[in-house]
Figure (cartoon, rainbow, N blue to C red):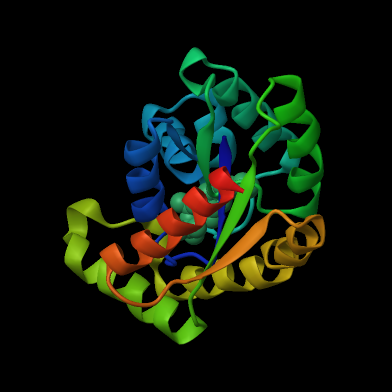
Length: 196
Ligand code: ADP
């Protein structure tokens, strides 16, 4: 089972992806975390993407496809995965389908969209920055970069909601409430999907 989480930055995809991963026993694949790890480790990939991430822009599709294909091909993804932060562009969405067919995970795919109003997202990300303090703060949580990430989301990623709606494998989840409430909504949708 492949579960794709879509939603704006700050929607809580990472938190919910971790919980779904635990519950369904499949790994969480967060492309943002993978790229941040590459930057921290100073790998060639990290050096390539560092400036792009700091500016709130997107890493090119061909680079991302390689990262995601490598990761999804690992043995721990044999039963599926939760994709958090991928796909983010029409190009990524178009190559994801053949990729999951190639690695034999085509069945039971589900896209969950976390709906959170933009004002709420901005409030949450500012809160995250204050809570994290100097040590834990993300370089891309500065105000102007947050606005750029939201713009990029609206322009490039949000259209994927329609793309997946047309394919009939998409469910929208209200991303407002407590973490538990939101998780319960997502979990109920996944269970329904597995039964249906
Ligand atoms: P956010 O909380 O903004 O959704 P992520 O942690 O998912 O952030 O990603 C952080 C950054 O990593 C993005 O702003 C982008 O530069 C890069 N990135 C992550 N996933 C992708 C992707 N699928 N395509 C292109 N760039 C990506």
